[in-house]
Image (cartoon, rainbow over all chains, first blue to last red; front, side, top):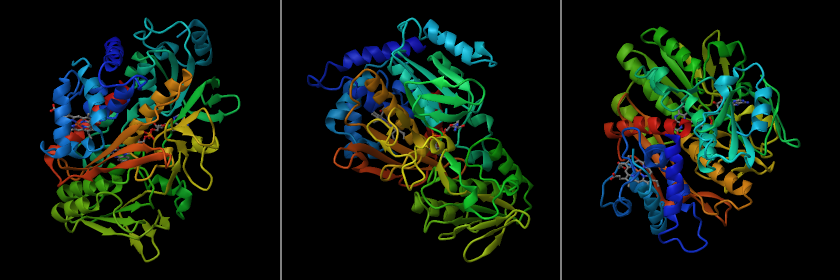
Length: 104
Length: 427
Ligand SMILES: Cc1cc2nc3c(=O)[nH]c(=O)nc-3n(C[C@H](O)[C@H](O)[C@H](O)COP(=O)(O)OP(=O)(O)OC[C@H]3O[C@@H](n4cnc5c(N)ncnc54)[C@H](O)[C@@H]3O)c2cc1C
């Protein structure tokens, strides 16, 4: 199990280098931002219970949900408040990170 | 773990059951034979355990991690008020440290007694001292009983704080069970900052929830040193009014100055109040080990840190997490925050140990869920990002708020949060 976690972390690190991130950008940007979601959504987005898992969800879906939380289009208990803390670029990095994680 | 480290480790672990301390082997195939350095973490709570796990996970095993924790198991403060309310037991909120070993964290059940900053060594109660390259200190708070007259060791046997979940939580529950119908429970709240700003008011809800069912003529009197409820005031007042009218009585600006355990009274500047159960929270300061190591910011009770790395502003190479820190503006002393401190520190330490600079733009968040009944919950949330001008974490404008109303939906999320954060820190 741990090896999977590690492998996923490595894989996502590699995947992250692909989108939007300019040369010299922090390769761990998505990982570090996403870590602040793990206390609710589970380590690397794999939730145990009661909160949606983010791991392995399509990148575009995740971006859309975050934007909809931000604008209030999707009603929420807490995500409308949290989503407002992230820029469009940061939302892209978050979505890229979680979509590259293995769902379990 | 390389052979040298293992030999030293086995030597130093002395009388401890060495077999049970050996790290799981899952990490070893990917780990190089020689780690790039050793991090010792003092305190296996929300900050420390999280940092230990994430250091191993993110360094892919290249950093050796020792976690020193005095307790055998992790008992969560968050949701411990539900034990007082009677809808959860201590077993429900207790988790094992075993899974951290699968990540290669070397969990030592011991107490750190001193830090030698020059020699970079931690002294321990049960085994020889251990050297580190970097140290993480996450001991939470210790309680300043001496600030309240009469709250001496003898009084502490019957006047409980139960602000560290464990046997005291159960003992306080037993006191409530033994209280006669028509009795009074007094909760004393110290001046802010203290660990968990909404905690005392959640506790008032949980005790009132129990008393309403079991002894409906009883009362909870909240004596608050602060002017008003420190966190989520409108939501707590609505819950008290709708659910516990006549049971909870709140008095702001009522600091407890003295206690008398024999007479079962507490004294404020205005009154002497008698209670059948006295639950007095003393003022709080950074945990003793942080204080004795000289990590306090002068003229404060807390440890100042560089918010890019959680590194102490007093001693380089030592990182402080959680409740013990001198909080950034509008940052509560919460488990959720401590968990995020742990990850911020882990990321920064990996960069620093590899000769790079930490992330210059950290963003972290806080959410505190409070149970106002057995099923209904309210939250407060905020996102905090680094402001280079002020050199601290500040709340992102617009990115904070509280629940629109208490709800059972958030009751489900509150309990799910606990499960997920415990797993996030412990494996
Ligand atoms: C009643 C109550 C309800 C709460 N509810 C919530 C909530 O709903 N949400 C939330 O986010 N937060 C909540 N909190 C706050 C939360 O518990 C703390 O903010 C959090 O525990 C802080 O994490 P920490 O790592 O600083 O300390 P802790 O989690 O307390 O960990 C410190 C650890 O260090 C160990 N230790 C200390 N000194 C030494 C030493 N010298 N050697 C070895 N080990 C040592 C201790 O045994 C302890 O395990 C609540 C607190 C209370 C009391």
